[in-house]
Every structure is written in structure tokens, then in C-alpha cells.
Image (cartoon, rainbow, N blue to C red):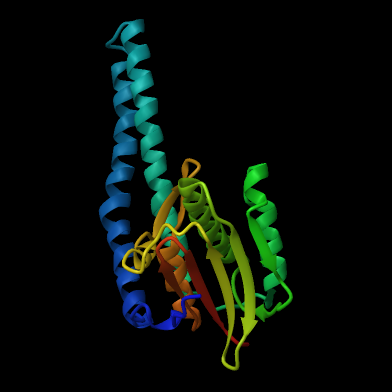
Length: 242
């Protein structure tokens, strides 16, 4: 067994600095993206109407198809901008929800995640150490889905491995462990898992582990990733006690 200290693998960012950077990013999107997209949507509709009396039926059909494709792209971009704004509000909003139970959060995530029959058998949970913590339930589903998606991808890539989830109670924090034994990542590549603030999942954009870690830092917790090549990838998620 290789011994390692999981809470010294990454420098801890300053939450205030990260929050200010996040706010600037949202402001940039709101100013530089939303307004031009609104103009393009209006111009797309106006151009289609102006061309109707000028073109024959086959040309109109082609223009209509092109206009619909362009409109769909614009709708996706608007949805992404809205997601960023919603996540920004979720990130900095004070926690007002009732305390959540870890065991129930795990059960809900496993019930909602679209496992194949084979994949579900790779997941092993020891929920004997349950704990309550203050957090948004939707955020917890984002977190678990990201962890599951990454671990399952690594297992399928290596055609080997299992997933182990367990919790512990320390004097200062509640700790959740999430480990897969595919052995894909290395100590040098493990920190890269937090670079993605957004990920594409089944045709939609959702928060990535970068956002999840930032949210945990704002809550007073943290998340680190420790990996040993050809052995395991081990996430340790720390929640402040309430």
C-alpha cells in the first residue's frame, strides 16, 4: 500500500479571488455575448421575412432550413449564457437549504445516473458513516455525476477497475472518499481534472469539476485528487461541519 497525504497535492486557491474572477467572466459574457446574439436572432428572423416575396419555392425552402439551423445554434448559445449566470448565482448564494444527508444524496445520484447494467455493478458504497451537511441538492448531483462519469470513463478505457465510495468523520470536517482502481491518471495529470468548469454531457452543457471545487471552497470545504499510475485515482471531498 502506498501512503500519501491527499491534502497537500494542490495549492488551495483564495476563494475571494476566484469569486471575483468568476464575476468578471459572467459580466464579460453578459456584455460581449448576449447582446450580439439577441441582434443576430432578430436579424435572422427579419431576413427570412424579407426574402419570402423575392424567392421561388425551392429557394425559400432552402433558406428556411438554413434559418432554422442558425436559430438552433443561437438558442444553444443563449442557453449556455443562462447556465453561466445561474451557476454564478448558485456559487455565491448563501446556503438556506435544510441540511442534507450524505446517504440520501448518494442514493438519489445513483438512482438518477444512467448506468448500463454492467456499470452499476462496478460501484461499491460503504455508507455506514453517514453525516448531514448544508448544501444545495442540485449541486451535489452535479458533483456525483461528474465523479461517476470520469471514473466510469477511466474504467472503460482500461477495461478494468471498480469504484469505491465511503465517508469518515474527523474532528474538523466531514470527508467523502471517491476512488476508482482503473489506474489511468498519474500524480502529474491528476490536477488537470479541475480545469473544466463546463462539460458536455449527452448533448447538454453542465458544470464540471472546476466549478464543483470552486463551490466547495466557497462553502468552506475543498476537493483534491490524488493518483498513482496503474493503481487508483482518489478524490477526497471535505465538507465543513455544521
